[in-house]
Image 1 (tube, rainbow, N blue to C red):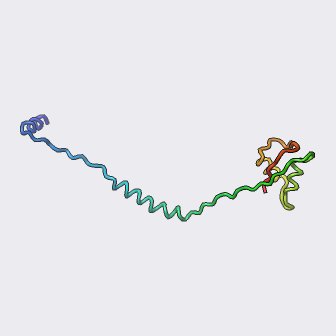
Image 2: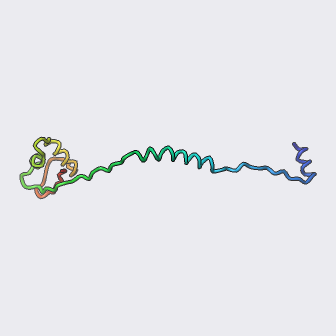
Length: 108
């Protein structure tokens, strides 16, 4: 190899080394193929937004309990305990103690 280098220096020629250039064509082809596969799949999906929860506001009166408020807002075939759980969750209640004048959100 040293002899080759000396020969090139003696003749004054320079060798040209070609580097391979990175082309974007494979990346573009891959992106186009992935779009052709995913767009039809995504367009056939239906996304539904959750309906907004509606609330009634009740002001606690002296003598009211969570059970009495829930029983007045539960339908005839409904479960009062489920209504109590919903009221507790909506108002972040830790206990069933209510204060007169307190405002409660009742899920409808």
